[in-house]
Length: 164
Image (cartoon, rainbow, N blue to C red; front, side, top):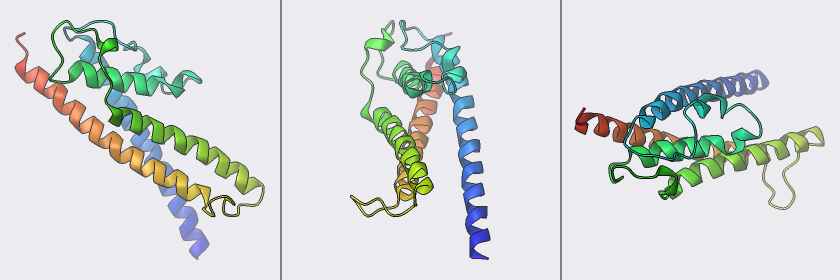
């Protein structure tokens, strides 16, 4: 009974990850297209890259970070007109989000290898790697949610104050 519940929970978690991932990629595609129309220049990424950049290895190691950096810096209310986006500083929160996600991927791969070869707690820290992976993903998802809400607010602010 407990084993069935554990497997059901694992499937629910993977489904949630898939749905959240699809929502973020869809949001990024729209947001990146919107900020391309702003009065600034030289982005770190291309708007056509907003979807494919998430799925094509090895581009997907850096593309989401670059896309989010472009959306955040181009839409931020403090950005001056005609700014060169790729020279604007990227807030640490974006680096924290992407760094935690990459750590979760690396630790997740280590956990899979560990499970194949025994599945015991990781000796140096006496911790299960799947717990570390899940914790990194949860914190990364919380930071990502905060970034998306704030960036969406910036985009809405720019739309409301636009002189078009």
